[in-house]
Image 1: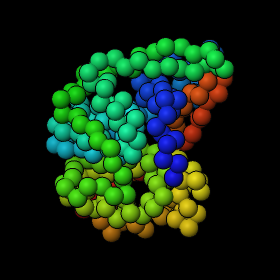
Image 2: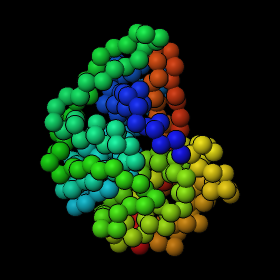
Image 3: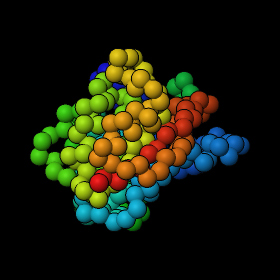
Length: 241
């Protein structure tokens, strides 16, 4: 796995824009409807949880938007990401607006600020650096576990799948979103699913979880004023038996 990829200022800025940017800051003039519908991915994925809860875990939290959004209905939220730079940025936003740079083209850029969303409660949100395949043993159990766009970036994703029944409390909920973009530089091909990713998830999770729903959630990442990543993530919601 390219460890330093997610430690660069460039990636931190892209993800701050992805998580906290407004439509006006992200979209080009005359953007088609599909681009607008792909905004706010980090907000939309966590809305599939069905009820309030005591404890929530956001795995692969990146710069923290989903973690903060879950604080609206959770007493305690723990956000974990492999990138030190991401979790540092996520924690810093609770203290005040965070400056970052949006690349426009070549040497042209725009200074922006990431703001804590209105109405969230940062007092119950904490962030830490960690490896989703080797989570610390004393994390405990959670009523909600959220893992968005994480699975297909792990070298050995089955290690996380095996840990999930321990992390999710009985009756708790799990949301996994993945664009299924399996790439050798992140996950060795021998560790890719042998069939469709959703069928692979069913094989690993169905002994402990009931599948509640599956749906597609698009997302948009702006790289420059004229280059965007539009991707469809496959979201699945599970309930722990």
